[in-house]
Amino acid sequence: MISPSLARIGLLVPAFLLAACSSLVLDPGPDDVAFVVIGEDGAATARLITAAPACPPLMVDNRAMPMRVRVPKSAIPARPGQAHMPPSSAMLACEAPIAAGAVTASVAGIALPVPKAAPKRIVVIGDTGCRLKGKEFQDCNDTQAFPFARVAAGAAAFQPDLVIHVGDYHYREDPCPAGRAGCAGSPYGYGYDAWAADFFTPAKKLFAAAPWVLARGNHENCSRAGQGWWRWLDPRPYQPGRDCDAPANDAIGEHSEPYAVPLGGGAQLVVFDTANTSYKGLPTSDPRRAAYADSQRKIARLAAQARYNIGVDHHPLFAFGAERDKNTQEIRLFGGDKGLLDAFGDADPGYLPRSFGMLLSGHVHLWEQLSFASTHPTQFVSGFSGTAEDIVPLPATPPTGQTPAPGAIVEHMSSWIDGFGFMSMERTGPDSWRVLVHDRDGRERNRCLVEGRKSRCELAQVH
Image (cartoon, rainbow, N blue to C red; front, side):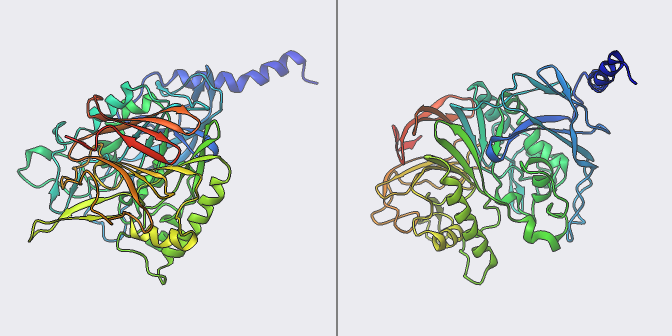
């Protein structure tokens, strides 16, 4: 028989070993990055991306917990047709849950923010990477031209309880042209080095400030940076085969289920994946149309769980963009993503249930607000946090009869063109928010109030 004293010693051994292991990793490696991602039902997961050979323990309230390997140490493999892509660093992805009510957390010497049950101060950013593709090359080495690190620092200084990223993290797809000093030496391709330069390194101060809710953008579809999305950002457990590595599996890699994140007080976020839609529209024969209609029905079921819902996705349903005709120089407005409007409209002519008060999106590289006389939720676009901005101006009010979506009647509109920054939301009531628009250094540039499905801003246009 084992004596009670020996039994107690045996119970202490695992904790002792974990504590001993934790003492071996006092300082983060130069390439290590850690953050907290919020997923289904508000579950918080600590993530670590490291060049180390093994996962260190996660420390929660001074207790060591083992981290599991999310993806073994490896470099992202090239997909067919990407043999020209440069080799990239091999990285290990680790993760572990953080229980609700935790007070402190850290991993590999990196302090982590812990989730709050009812976040009241929220930062919204999107479209954060530095564009290197085709004929469009941003000066990634210039903090004026690519200010995401400054935007992230300014957003961290706001002291948010939660950060929402509305998608498009990775933009460094092609090599910087020879002789262009503004982006000389930039990594590119779909491996970790380009991801780190575009997102993980400049976001570090904001990673330390608050947990993140992450929406997937079209830059993270399988033919682009989807492999990195599944390895490092998606809140769900990693699933080999649903990782965008093999084009034969893209049917499952291009789509994921919506999920809800409680905000307390009868409100929740509903996050949905729109990475593979098409602005040209989706014909009924396109399988994506049925897939997105099914997503809409699942979104509606999730929305029934809360009195007040805020949608989070990449492609706006109810916003305008603008483009200039190259020949006539005439400005033409375009509306919400036609593929989603086609598919969501198949499931519901109103597109989203009436319990949606707000939709947060990106994709259009500007900041924008629209509120409607119809029953559509107020739409905010926060796609102005790093990548090259859209510079064709929007009007202070749309032309008579112009609408971003069939049946949507614009009542109020505000925009900021060619200005980098972030948006913040402070909850002031069960379904009311104070929304501020900040520039790259955190200075306030516009102020809006949201009540239910309605919103209105002090300035129609920020200059």
